[in-house]
Amino acid sequence: MVRKELSPIDVYRFLPKTNCGQCGEQNCLAFATKVVTSEARLEKCAPLLTKEHERARRQLEKMLRPAVKEVVVGVGLHAVKIGGKFVMYRHEFTYTNPTAIAIDVTDEMPEGELVDRLKKVEGFNFEFIGHPLKLDMIAVRSITNEPEKFQATAKKVVENTNLPIILCSFNPQVIKAGLAVAAKSKPLLYAATKDNWKEMAELALRHRCPLGVFAPNDLKLLRSLAETVLEYGIEDLVLDPGTFSAEGLAGTLSNFTTIRRSACKSGDEFFGFPLMGVPMIAWTQKNGVHEDVARWKEAYLAALLIVRFADIIVMHNINGWALLPLVILRQNIYTDPRKPMAVQAGLKAFGKPDDNSPVMFTTNFALTYYTVASDLESAKINAYLIVVDTGGIAVDSSVAGRRLTAEKVANALKASGIENMVKHRRLIIPGKAARLALEIEELSGWQVLVGPKDSSGIPKLLQEKWLTQA
Image 1 (spheres, one colour):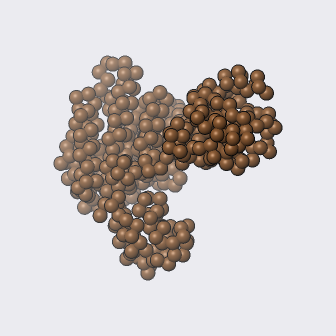
Image 2: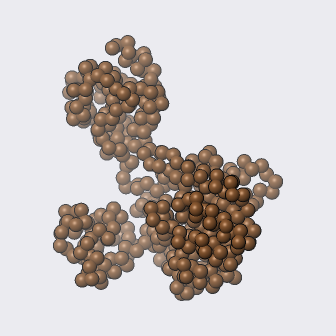
Image 3: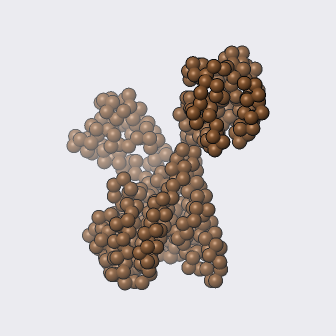
């Protein structure tokens, strides 16, 4: 039974039915509902973890198993989970475990350049509508094919970052040398091929590491290799069907799509593993073109792979102009389509407002709130902002859908306690809520000043109207 087709009753049948509340829910049926929608995990049910309910727990684990297995790379707080997909398309259910973005380093890099690159990767941090956007992994690539050099590079990486690692070489002896210093980090070993699979599988088993399987543009061979290493005892795999740009781009996207469809729609267990793409292939096919062209090709190839089911991508460029659009794209794809992105409603203070400072309101749609907040902060405005709960809907849509009403604004004003914090009774409202102005005045007793439709116009409004009417 596919996860999205499960009902809470399907899960409830196997729960202890004690209604103990240890999971944080009122009863077992409420917990079952959260489990089906991926808002709660089975581990939260303490009675289910006992030996008495072991059989039921295993049955539930089987029922709830994703079409694409979840694989963990790394250890501790910095470990990265990849895969764990239940459906092919996000509108069917939701996506879990955002695409991990790895940046490469090589065993040819001087130590100073290597350490500086690691610091830049760890220092990449942007906030987008309240969510931190970061890079996830380091791919250590063997260029020299010399075990000693690779080991020294892997050692420097382990010493200078806590990010999960991918050890990259087709030479098992090189991977073995890297594991001598990085095994405790539980790296992803990349990659097993038709020529080296047995040696690579031995290393993965010995060190309990996930294993990448590589068969460029040959899905039949890739599936056969996956089946072979699974029978050998490996449990955690990552599949790489090859990444090609230019004339091979259409085939690359077709291969990724075919694998994911086979896993999610046909239940193919040998294709039910995370997918790995390598957009940095654009750098190996420069053919004399300018580096900026290679960066651009790598960036659009990465974007296509994120959209087309890649669970890990390996990149070379660390320029913000290329990476920032990618992490924002990833964030947008991996939000829950069932839930609007909302912030906590209530009173917010910007700068150091006093009893004469402006009072305004907006909705709790995350993008709207952070846009307004950014404009207030960049203009260094001292003001109070009341965030009205509209269920995470923007101003114009919530006005049209009656999620934002004059009554709701008046109630939010009263609940905020702002009347005890300022001497005046003047409220700036969004320009897109202008039609509510008179009714807000009648219900609240506050004088309403209609603001701009775009919050970037707030500084000008305050200069021209607020200060002149003070």
